[in-house]
Length: 192
Image (tube, rainbow, N blue to C red; front, side, top):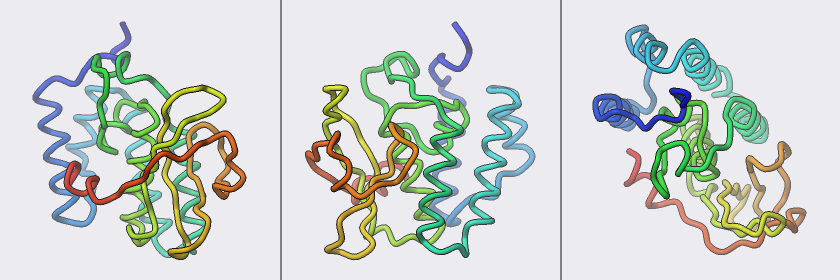
């Protein structure tokens, strides 16, 4: 079995939890060479590169217009991560990875994509009140699915950031998705 699909050992899980706590305390974390070396040793060169590219994205996109931030973040995660079911990736039915776990392993399921996009956009200054993790039914796949939705204004039609398609589209154009519910408050409590 490739190392990508093995569950995290307790020591590494504690490492990621420490990073998540540091992210919360500092706003975002400067990935030190020591952290990058640990990730590289455990997951390889590609994992280290993904984290460096994520850090570069956080630096370079900070002052972009909000629409550009959405596009860059959506593209970054869709192009740098593979979809893998939790049962295969983490050996559990349902696991919500932190953005660091998701990037280090380079894979996750739909909620991992949505969560990573949410926290990255939040770090880039997008108001968390404009974003929701939205539970939908993917009609063509006939299965539950999660996406990140963005509301430019409180009454606007939300834009959908999804790992199923590369383009961000208004929810009115995503007839392949049936919304069930959305939330945001719990994310900050669970992950940070």
